[in-house]
Amino acid sequence: MLHRLTISELTARLARREVSAREATQACLDQIARVDGDIRAFISHDPADALAQADGADKAIAAGADFTRQPLLGVPIALKDVLAVKGQPLNCCSKILGNFRSPYDATVVEKLKAAGAIIFGRLNMDEFAMGSSTENSAFQTTRNPWDTARIPGGSSGGSAAAVAADECIASLGSDTGGSIRQPAALCGCVGMKPTYGRVSRYGLVAFASSLDQIGPFTKDVRDAAMVLEAISGHDPRDSTSVPQPVPHFSKQLTRDIRGLRLGLPKEYMVGGLAPEVKAAVDAAVKQLESLGASVQEISLPHTDYDVAVYYIIATAEASANLARFDGVRYGARVDGADPLEMYGNTRGAGFGAEVKRRIILGTYVLSSGYYDAYYLRAQKVRTLIRQDYLKAFEQVDAILTPTTPTPAFKVGEKSGDPLQMYLSDIFTIGCNLAGIPGLSLPCGFAPNAKPGAPDAKLPIGLQLLGKPFGEETILRIAHAYEQSTPWHKERAL
Ligand code: GLN
Image 1 (tube, rainbow, N blue to C red):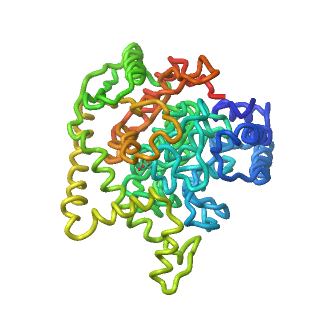
Image 2: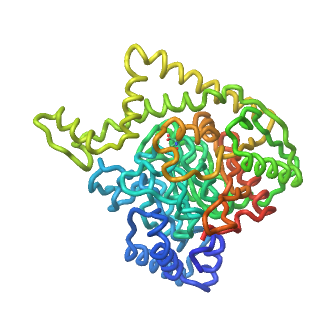
Image 3: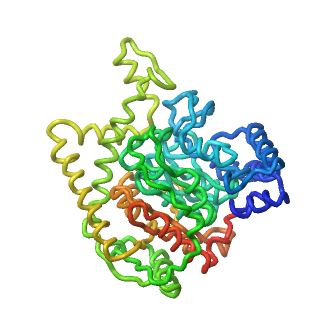
């Protein structure tokens, strides 16, 4: 059952030499063989390479490796298919990248390797991270481990499902408008989007560069702190990475939360919120109060504009970023009579419908005559949204919201209606627009009427939002809540 362990449990056993990294890696590979035919979180993985890395970790442990210097030594961690690993395929779950392989490691991959992690497997996602259900992958649809008739969330659905199904010990995803927190909530794991600039984006394929951040999916809050600590830090190769010291997040977790002030945005408890989600969040608020935090209502008055502003800025940036996929620089090419026809043929065949929709929308809002009315206006409203948060943080230490309006929906339920799909990120998008850190952790379950399974249930997520570079505070609050509730101990399979 080694695949079921958390990072802190596994590394404690590895350090005591009770188990080997090879055994832990093999347990994950066995779990993949057992369940991934149904879950379909992985689009590829290389068992021989994973075991070879595990043997390397075992050698280091036998030679007396120092776990304080290599806190992830021997821990199998899988990656969303948007992060570069030298020599491995990188597709962003799109057809347009063809058989492209990364010529270098992303900074986060270098950092995970330096911390001793075993990097294995490519995880399914919505094409170019555009989506909320992982149904936009050009390769396959990932299923929610709590109910395979339902979606795992997106765009990092593979990263969430793999952790929830114990196919890896932890994973990385990327979050542009909720793509870590939303699938973490729907799959019942912990997911964290760091402050913009905390983690280097070098080696992350860009979707919307001013919003994208890489972050961890884990089985508990301590593990999220450990992975975040390993991947954070200034990187001269990413000009938006911020030279801020990286706190020892995992050492700060057990500090008391007594006296901390939490804000509940009144704009978030609105129509469309499922009653079981509201009940779980209300109960979490009471629990946090019983731990000594004080809770007050706050206001984020521009919340109504979050989704509209996001879909202008994100599509504008995506249309520019995706111009590089032209049949010349990377991957697939469909020839034509001249270069223009070749570009058209390549992009026409290579991109899926959602990606095309966004490129067209983004090109439109940036075009002359519309730029001022849409893009420029959206940038101004984005500033107001960020100011709302900064103002709220003058009164409170963290903000509490539901992560999603509903538990996981059914496969196919929203795929024909992009607007309905976009609204599933209504609570997560503000955090990216404001550039602040956010975390989702399990806060209960909704009953799930499932034929043949009378006690079936679906996870619900609680979102904590923090001040810029205030990850330490939201991790501490999350940890105190988690340790006083049973939710994180429940496993999907
Ligand atoms: N679901 C949102 C979108 O489709 C967010 C995606 C993300 O965070 N990568 O754009």
